[in-house]
Amino acid sequence: MRFIAYHRVSTDKQGRSGLGLEAQREAVNQYVRRAGGVVLAEFTEVESGKRADRPELAKAMAMCRSHRAVLVIAKLDRLSRNVAFISALMESGVEFVACDNPTATKLTIHILAAVAENEREAISARTKAALAAAKARGTKLGGWRGGPAPSAEMQAAGGRARAAKADRVAADLAPLVERLRAEGKAPTLAALAAELNASGAPAPGGGEWSIMGACRLSRRIAALPQQRAA
Image (cartoon, rainbow, N blue to C red; front, side, top):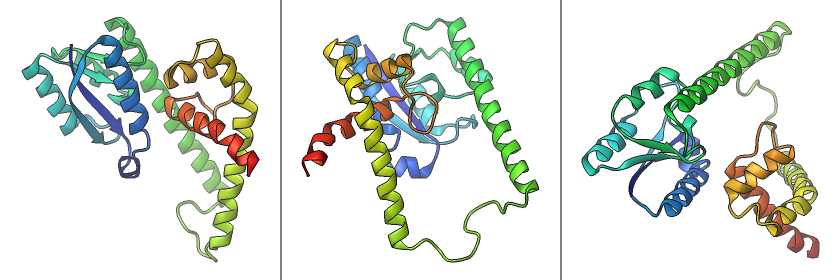
């Protein structure tokens, strides 16, 4: 099978740093290998999921048509969190598959898109309500608010505190991760993320474990012995 990969990140910073892209590429490459296929090309969009004008997606779809290829994405929400957008894509004639739910039917895709759209709207509403409440309390919103900027020493201390917290989480979860791998339940980062979510292990920052989160956790666990030895 021939595939055209499409990745999307929401900000220029994510695009420059590769944050999010590494996990998307890994998920896509793993799926394509399992399918015995090949990725002919990949397109990366730096754009909000709210926008419908996606030049890179348009190029990817055009190449799918010309090469009779399947559009492959890591997750459905990388296409959009908009039901109308997903519906239009489904009617375009381009076959596509989301690696997080490759066997999804058209009905399932509609339901997942509706859930993603509702989640996006709920997050937006909560954010606006929180900002309005903060403003009502007299909190100054946005950017630097004057006063002395954090010193390099303060920034370094903050970085060390965050790293120490991440190491504690890694140490706490290391036995669980090792057991899952020993039982063959986490052969990939995607499987590890799924097992962590199923176990109820709290993800950094709340929410659910992602492939990138599982990747970072694995790296920290691998580094723990060296850190202890040091």
